[in-house]
Every structure is written in structure tokens, then in C-alpha cells.
Length: 180
Image 1 (tube, rainbow, N blue to C red):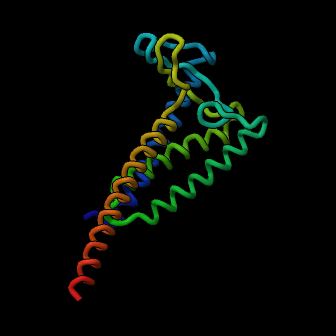
Image 2 (image 1 turned 90 degrees about the horizontal axis):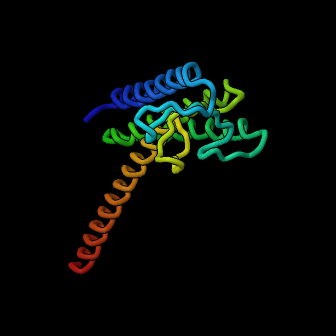
Image 3 (image 1 turned 135 degrees about the vertical axis):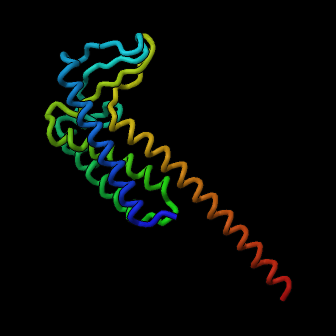
């Protein structure tokens, strides 16, 4: 079973890789996909790279002119919560640590944009068919999504195991009381 050193390396190397890949791809997008909102085909019309700036939050939610600061504060709080959850992980929590690291790295990548880009978070991955398109997103958004799904699955499995243990423990207690 891996020790705390393994979890620390897994968390920080994964988070660092996500942040690095996110920052690099956003710089490439800003450099090569200019002007904004002009699609560049990658796989026909299904996958395109289209430079966009999102001053709001996920799915372009906005809270007006202060969105950058409000959502930046939320991202900072999320980084603290995710890091705290990582610190509380146990020795057998490899997938949980991976999910937390992916989400942390993605949140950090978008947080960097909120700090340094007055235009908003750089998005460029554009997927869809014809006029039916998903919101434009980036590497950080993908990491947050994959991390959240992985974390959700792990937490669901933990909950199921806990209920199974409680049920087994409750059955043992009731059988002990019948014997006495």
C-alpha cells in the first residue's frame, strides 16, 4: 500500500501537470487562434478551436462587472477545500487523491487566468455539430470535470462500503442480543 509520500507526489505532480498543460495551451490559443470567435477546424465541424474569453464562471455565468473577482474568490476557496480534502485522505485513497489533484489543478489553471487576464478565462475547445455546440472550454475545465466525476465515483463507493459495514455491524449486534 502506498505511503503518504506517494500520495503527495501523485497530488502535486498531477496538479502541476494540469496547470502547466492548461497555461501552455491557453498561451498557444491566444497566440495562434486570433481573432476571437473565429473557428479553426480540427476534426471537421465537430471539433474546432475557437478563441473565447469568459469573464464569468462555468457556462458563461456572469455576476456583472465584478464577476472576475467574485468567481476568483470562489476558485480560491475551492483550492483550499480541495487541498484540505487531499490532506484528510487515507493510505488507500489513490483514486480519491487523483480526482482531487485533477480538480485542484484545473481550478488553479482558471484561477491564474482570473488573476492575470482582464478579458477573462481563455477558452478554446469548441465541440458540437452545426449550430448545436457545447460551451467552449479549456484544459482546466476538462480536468475539473474528470476530477469531479472521479471524486464523485470514489465517494459513492466509500458511502456504499460504509453502509455495508454498518449493515453487517447491525446484524452482528442484533444476533448477539438474541444469544444473550
